Image 1 (cartoon, rainbow, N blue to C red):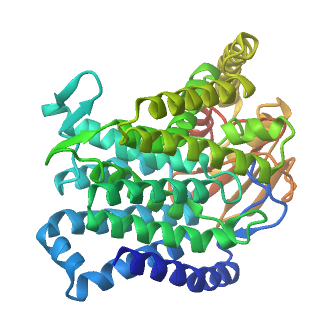
Image 2: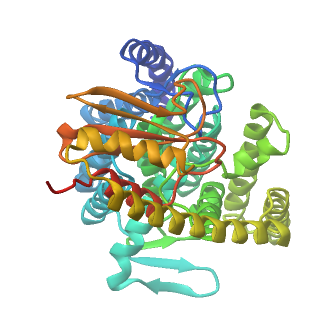
Length: 466
């Protein structure tokens, strides 16, 4: 049955992906190559998540309708499966909205936390952990926070690592295939079917997503895949009705988790926004070493495969095998961290110094904003905003900006080359009828800090009293 689900998901993905790609091109649901994080020259459709979702869920729903062993397993624990389906579709919808209108990162995070809590209420819980050397640890009141942290963390990690053609898709394919092997060894037919369907859909999509990609996962895809892997990794590793064996989920998802942890550390050192895009992830740093996109992708696939072999070795009684793979995984992580600068004191010192410089920049911007506020005597926001942007550009706080509103149309200030690459951030004015401002920073490798954005938002939304 799991083989049927895998093949069916593969065929649906191969059929569905070109159709979604064509639809996205017609409706302009494409990745903007002007964005600072983009490494492509041409717009590329980014709705692959919908194709993967349809391909994954099609065989699952079909097996649930047709009376068989899998349908019996589904209906025996219907609440858990329904929760999984609803939550997966919810994160897919959130990602699609993100691809369309880019809501504030804090809003997206709050919605993800809500979905993770819904999953916990529906039965996908970490209530106890089986930790090597420590035995069974009951989480009790910490069950909900631990579950939310795990689910949201994996979703965010997959969003972070989805930066090169085929990278996140290939990693997800390797992880889902490994979880299929775990379910097979445990004789768990339900999760064999789930992981098989996931692997089939990812393999079919990868044919269009590998370098040079003709379609991207998009936030809908990284959300959907990240959520399913987070939950399925837990469900395939339950040693008892409530206990989770932590080792295998942590290992199979080791690379995305490592990249996410390093990203948070780096952004803390640099005092930059935790929720803003930048070019400092592991794959970006490997590109900076001179490797091609394809080589970086294949190298990180290999690292993921090694992590997964290490996870599978924990199911083997062979001590030498576990030791050998443990040494290999440790050596690989050390080499990866060293080559990307995380173990070199000079690089860490540079990040710390740059963080202090960023802090000074935030303070200088705050002083500039205060100065502009006291100087401006205009009363209409449609008049005030362009004047403020001109002063910000003249002082070097931004490279350029585009202000659009329904009253006076579009105003372009400073560097506004539509094809130019750089860090861009959209600030919506209040009320909505006042329009929105797209800010541009050239020659910056990372986005503005939360404090910087908040200062600019308050300044642009201000109005003078008559």
